[in-house]
Length: 210
Image (cartoon, rainbow, N blue to C red; front, side, top):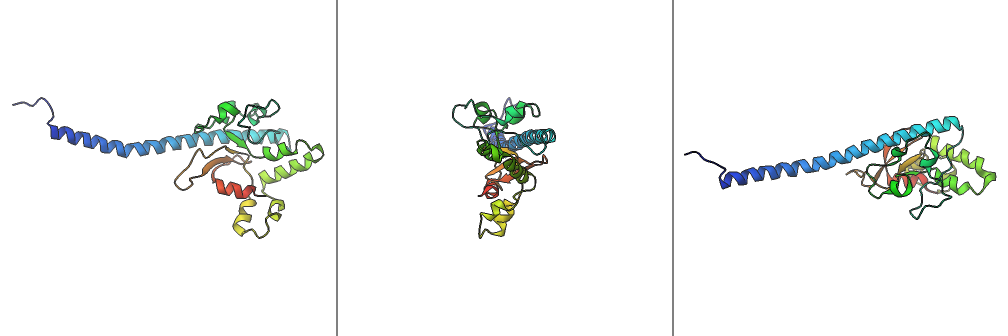
């Protein structure tokens, strides 16, 4: 006699196999999505780094005057956002990280923090020192600390001094959008030569210590 369907046991076996396959595939899908976001973010930062190179070619010895991290509060009309300053050199959409789950781009115009902006903004009220500040910032982003910050770290370990001496990133994720198993606090950053690296938040803190 011809059967018209599965037996209960056969159906349970098929369901078990499907469940097993889904449990195997889902983590891989999640990792693939995370990797895809990292790749898009890396491409964005590469474009931003290239934009900075063009800006510095046209303005030798200078970087854009803009806030480092826009305020999470309602926008200040006097606050200059880096994505606005760099609009000629970098498409607006490049300032949006695909992993930005906190809507920084929508609220602040950028998912990325402009690291030199912290120093430049602080110096904006001291015109007499601005040229000196620009020299310091260029030093920090091109070759790293010239010894000034390290001098404020008496007794620092060789590891900390090595971190401090590294060049500063120009722009980086505002938050840990791209964690990995090895770097739970990992975030992507672009440097003055447009290299994009995944760095550890603790490394960044050491680099900026003062």
